[in-house]
Length: 322
Image 1 (cartoon, rainbow, N blue to C red):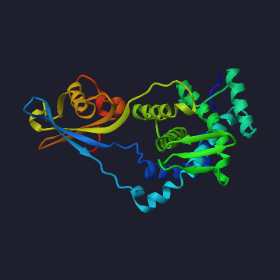
Image 2: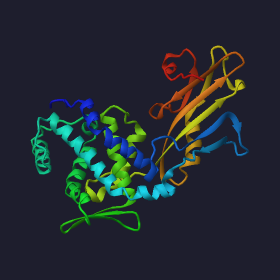
Image 3: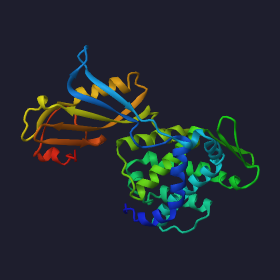
Image 4: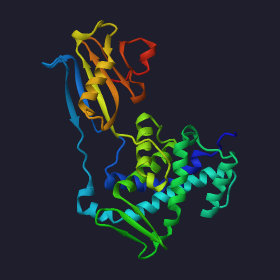
């Protein structure tokens, strides 16, 4: 099969306005962020009476205008947010089809072209869709399900916002209802996909899970079987290593049981298995003469017992400024 030839810069130039508008709306209307919700601080060797590592949980309190009168006014833009998100969706569709030498942009022709290429097994797609056929299926399934409801947005009487915050779009005998959370999931999923394809973000394990979570919540609109994931939580583990817990001062050397740290995190954040925990790990050590810090992103946090030594090539790539 041929490789995908779409130019990310071409897509970036076409979606800048919609993407920026949606980033604002999903932050203010849906309180969405891909930043950590807070952090947990642990000092190595500091044990509670039950023998567990003592921990301090820090919660990030974000300020949003959505609770104000301005936020109430913004909620009235939900139909336009749907329209902007579908346009973003549509432009990604066109970008993919253009790379497959399709230039007929009627909605029905785009869908029929996709089906023809898919059935002939000649469709080329960008990396994320190649690596996850389920995400590709949902992307195209949502497009086919939602495409007929884009026009009523701009026609009087075609759209309304219900008391529960859902938007309701009528077209002939059909009605599309997107709850507040479903609209937020649609916007976030398309934003993650778009930002990945233009190179603004990389899909780490948390974003992959979050994308699957959002697409799963839209199942009634695409009818593709996806796992029903738990609510994703993103946080950060900060580990302070006192000088007395170091095995060596020059160079700084310490042995850490990452398994024990993980169990402490799970005890705090996921006691009832209703959520899925993702966290980066920041380790800091200092002495009177030296200091060092390592930052392990989500996908690289070690398991088991690991010895960290400044000068060890295996882990020096994770060294960061103190």
